[in-house]
Amino acid sequence: MERELWPELYHLVRRIGRQVHQKGVRYQPWVIALLVLWAALHDRPRNWACERKNWSTTRLRPVQLPSASVLARRADSVGMGLFWRMLEQALRNSECQGLLSIVDAKPLFVGGCSKDPDARFGFGAGVHGKGYKLHTIWANRCLPEAWEIAPLHQHELIVARKLVAQIDGGGYLLGDGNYDETPLHHLAGQRGFQLLTNDRRPNAGKGHRPVGAFRRRSIELRHTTFGKTLLAQRGAIERSFGHATIFAGGLGPLPAWVRRSTRVRTWVWSKLLINAVRLKAKSRLVA
Image (cartoon, rainbow, N blue to C red; front, side, top):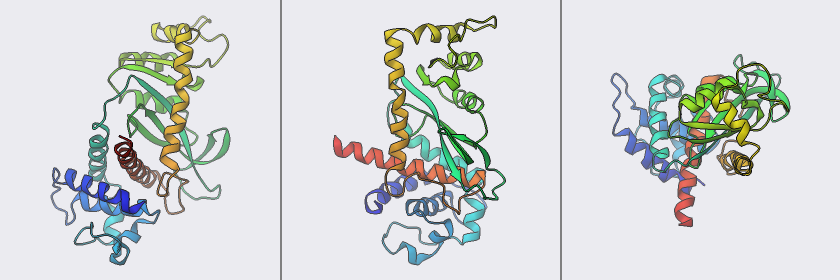
């Protein structure tokens, strides 16, 4: 896996790195990004990538490696967040966005005895546990259109409002019954999307509370042949999550050294980027 993916990751980071120059630092963002990605690709802690002996299998590496303390201080910073976003946008914008998007979440559990103060007890995939949840909106591209990391106990509706506010382009947005609420339908409509969900309750929309035009349209649409055909496509997001996890170096369970929300976010970011490069390489082989 390293032999196939690392050259793609390295050249992407170097290309985007030429557009960024951060003042007052010894190591530019592209160097920090390479170390984080190298460690994530091998499922190792970050400080593992600070040792030159662990780069013996490739010539595509920085000339100088920062210390473990520098990497720990820089990897989750705001400046690096902007650089991660640039990498993400470069990969996402290389593909055309489709008219069908899907919103859902994936649990990221930690041990029940973990002392991580940011992890919370909650339900994920019908299982009670402790940890975080990856909330995403996937379309047909190699990366989610928007994503967030939140504690496991936070309701999917709350995070979905943040995600919907980040997307544009228009089309249909599919979700399960957890996302069937009037404010979210209205927000999606303002962004150019018709939210279509399963029934959360048998009599949804038939009470005395105001429903709104977008949610009423969703209620009408879900009982038509066209609406049922669309909702049948909602399972595609499980394949998207599956593609991100089924390969060596993919987004598996959180390892013991990935704790606190900032580290979890950077870890997930690196895994999503690795998966995106893998999908693009696979599509070229198929073509």
